[in-house]
Length: 283
Image 1 (cartoon, helix red, strand yellow):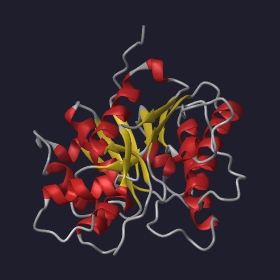
Image 2 (cartoon, rainbow, N blue to C red):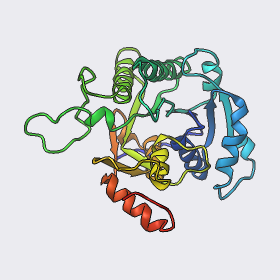
Image 3 (cartoon, rainbow, N blue to C red):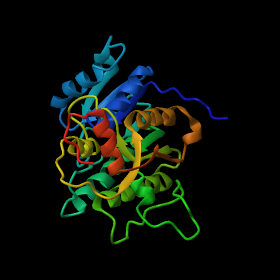
Image 4 (cartoon, one colour):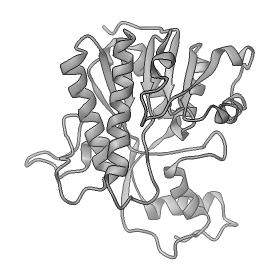
């Protein structure tokens, strides 16, 4: 039987992100204190306001939701950010609309950021870490012979020539995390959440790349729809899965693929057109 854990303070990296804001909202509703990291503290009010607009109780929010300035590319301030924290939830990782010319522009921040978060947690004596990865780290390579569906046991081969820099960055960052825990922090309890293509309502107008795809369809920015699809999942379900992982020991040492179903671009466009019939949505 799974033991239930109720930490007091969660460090949430990349708190200004689309998924992270939903996670912060869910954590606050569940009674946790959240310390969110941002690269620039000037953004903290924007993030707090976005979350507060959806909270059922905003009393003492400035005490329940606080912020620390850290950067994935710098060692500065990580130790201070970890002070008094029970659990680390690492969501920060670049996700561009357009793939970079140099894949290392994505890979290095993803890998180095994951390792910085893990090292800082380990140095602070924090034993519980949840990290947001992606199904890209699972289904980026062909299935082995005999397999009919992807599962958490599958891994994308980062040496495959045809994978995108984003897919490679998510795969290498996750591999680096597992290797670090195995080699340097064997007492740390790591859980990886592997969501599919994340969709759903943003908390404000500062949303992520996945929502930009929906916006492009809604605004008819492309004359034709791509003839492919992806495994999609609602951002609120992704947030709920992170909270579940924090609270339940059965998730220790596990990868958790978080998806709803496969959807083609054409099907998504038709659903958007039905919801917004006044828009010139390409279907």
